[in-house]
Length: 150
Image (cartoon, rainbow, N blue to C red; front, side, top):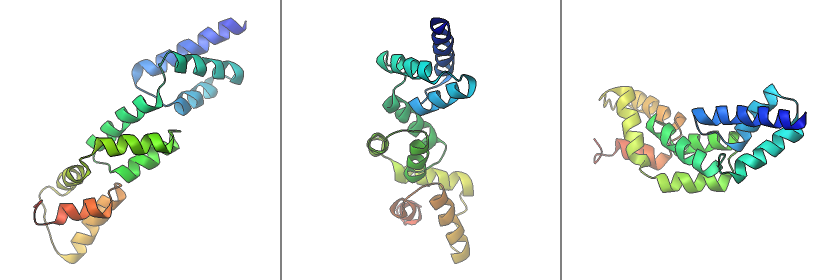
């Protein structure tokens, strides 16, 4: 009976992984919602890790690329990764290797404000606040408003 449950849970995890990369924590949570067999779920996760089907670094690389493309900054992405169970040192490494965050801030700005380079103080504060909420650092935000970037 336990082999049958193991195969069922393992196949469900493969189904989840066939759609997109997941962190180990995400897979564990999704399996626990569907199955109450904690011991078997842990064995499945071990087998997935051994077969390199669940890899938090690979998940992090894909996640950072995707979120950066959607206009989010490194701070927000870091927070999201940690909430998905990725270890902080893995997230920091991948985010620092990714680079190009000033350009990403500029793209997020131009997409949101469609070349509306309005320098009224009130509007500028709103625009900077938008970028800050997207997870960009002060330096990255200021690079958008520097004369070199405009």
